[in-house]
Length: 132
Image (cartoon, rainbow, N blue to C red; front, side, top):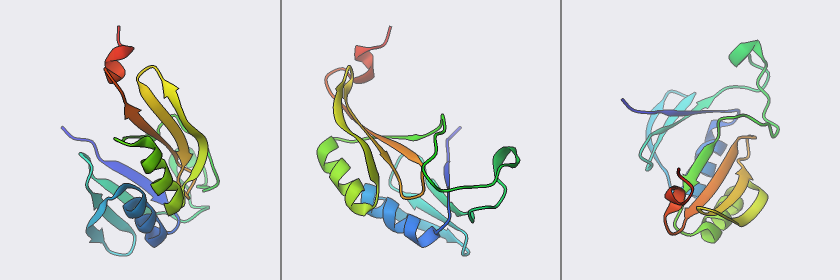
């Protein structure tokens, strides 16, 4: 079994630029003009061009302003300050600067398309520090 990450975006090339610059991912394959596979993480990331206003899940129209969803990316990094700077320089919006957490540090951002992303730097035991 494996997990595939699919991210809807209104501008495919802008999304490729963001995710490759922010996280060092590479273009694996292109699927016509509407999809790109990015590699470099344990799971591939598929960017899917979906215009704003088209119907998505639950019959709702897609919007790309900042939105909340219970599903978001947590990206584990070795240097949270460097990773945050790189993501912001690539176009992410910093919503909460790196702060201490029981497992290390966490910074909260949004990509240019409204999707939430948390950067996590594990310190010490990581999640084991809070596991019961």
